[in-house]
Image (cartoon, rainbow, N blue to C red; front, side):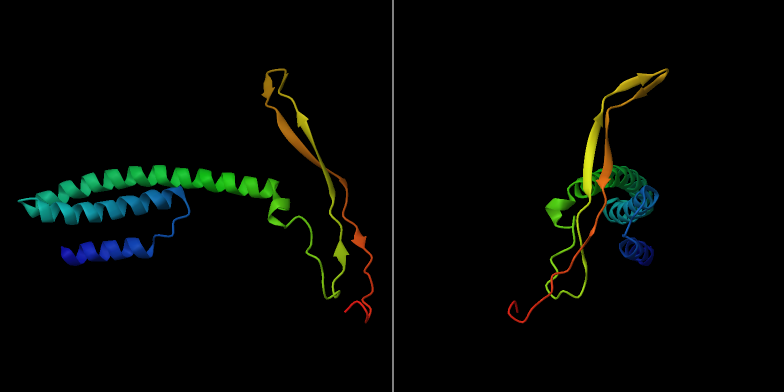
Length: 152
């Protein structure tokens, strides 16, 4: 019994890199069952009955907790990606870095405009207010300045 619990817990630790809701809940349930069974067997007067009760309770609690934890992390990640994409200039990735060596051509930033579309009703459809982004002027190749011996 102890070897099985150790094997299940080691397997849970090894596979702990979850990416989907299904994987998160599965890992939570498995680790909850293993932890609950080990705890129940150790604490109950009748180890087999305690292991079964602990496994059921541990699986239920850990599965539920995994669901809410994954949901919260997924929501946080989506918000972070959105904030990053709409604020690229704050992170210094909206235009190429200054080229010191002069071995690569430079490119200008595109001109981007946004327009707010108000909430509207069209027939039986409600279209919520949203922002539309438009590229009004494309990027342009910039002429390279020749590096002279005096500038070095």
